[in-house]
Image 1 (tube, rainbow over the protein chains, first blue to last red):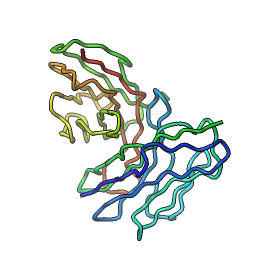
Image 2: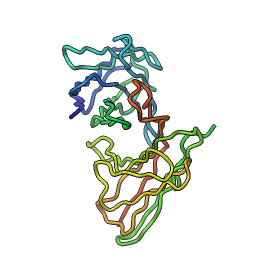
Image 3: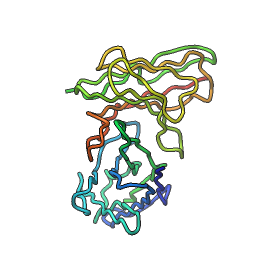
Length: 115
Length: 117
């Protein structure tokens, strides 16, 4: 079985300050991990993915995430928030089983950026 | 290159009416998925397809049917709409579901907002 927990449903930061969105996962085997972003009234866009190579993963728009197996975490960070970062972020775990990879979404974290 | 296109974008139905949501992808992806998104619940998988002519149930399949007659299209049907099916529906596709790390990157459509009165 696999699951993913996003620890904060809402995060509010000031523009120019760091962003931390937390994600913990549970999986019997080594999963693939992803962060997706959803801007208002839009579809989901891939930010970054971890696929068992480097544990520090860089994504688009200055975001990065670090895979920590010992803590079963995959937190998303950005050094300096921009107004355009205001969106909802989803942590996703994907685990192969036969010919199908089961994909599980977290419940999402809404990021508010204050001017 | 359009990616994943969903139609319609918005629809209002009365209880008991039927409708079909269409998803089309032009990336030659094998796998296609239908999700529903509800506040505080993330995305939940309704049905998925691993190739033309095949479909399978996801987490919340009740009240929905799907068909994949052509590789590029994945249809989601509601035979008798209920207020509980008010949601935003997302279609997604991926190149493969095989156990290849990173292969299952999903490409999403922009969503279809359905309201059932």
